[in-house]
Length: 393
Image (cartoon, rainbow, N blue to C red; front, top):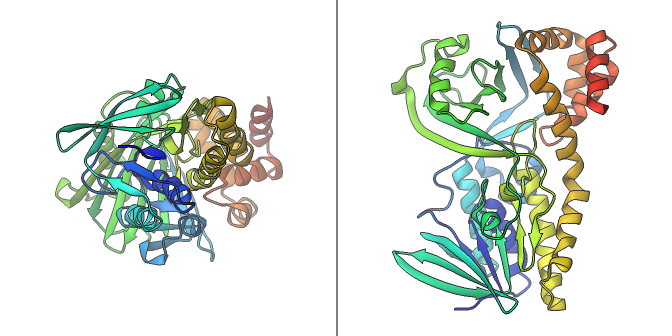
């Protein structure tokens, strides 16, 4: 069994790459280890309208629209803002993923479900991919492998490519519970509850919410989730029997200096193409998927799958979205160095018409560093000056 490209991982980013290459007439095989596309879900499902457009999935994936947020500190200090624009949408992530896979198939890609890659071997400038499908070991030879297999990518491990510098361990549930505000997300920043990250409530509908938490500690995030539910006032009355769906996942944070080698490119979570402030990966991943597919097609036309050729992919995606990641990492470093008390003070500094106007006019879920930078440079108080110096030192 031979094909032009093997993509390991049938998530939306892997399928986007597969679509881009297959529509140029190349034989694409996508290996997905799970029995169904989109399940289990690992995403909070809060994205921008731009992601809907980039994915070309249609608006029927949208469950709710978000116009603002309530941000809480450890001591219940709250910053609340609400605008007229739609800043984010809540989506049916399973449907989103399925639509992405259908697009790949319509353009000629083949998707194998229940197909788990177990090894890759280079032979004579080609790669053999060994996988298990329905308990049977199979092998496919290809000149190009694309690792779209998430954080701690096996493709990266097998071929000596860098792994994420940092991992967030995330846990989320979907529950029947009245939303605090249908068009506002709730965020809690408290190192005792979500060390190194934050907690969130995303309203899906009037009577359905998603509650999530992330931690940097290599511990069970479910334990922290229970602590969250017992402390956060907006979850008063929440009970275990409200839960109807449980999700968990890994969020890779950082900047890897190499997402390619001979015959191989990494994409999406495997390449740390996520926003360091929120963990969102669809926007950066879909932009990078377009770049990846174009470089792959160029490699086929040249008959060249060398490291030197595929380095064009890394250079191009870093030039395109690398600023988003690098500035996000700087801001995240500052965030981590603030105490709970300093974070509460920061929210109080922003609780005024000028700051809220900046947030509503500049805020964008896909470019969070822009609003942060605007706030730091516009709000003239000692704390902001101190943070601004820290960003650029």
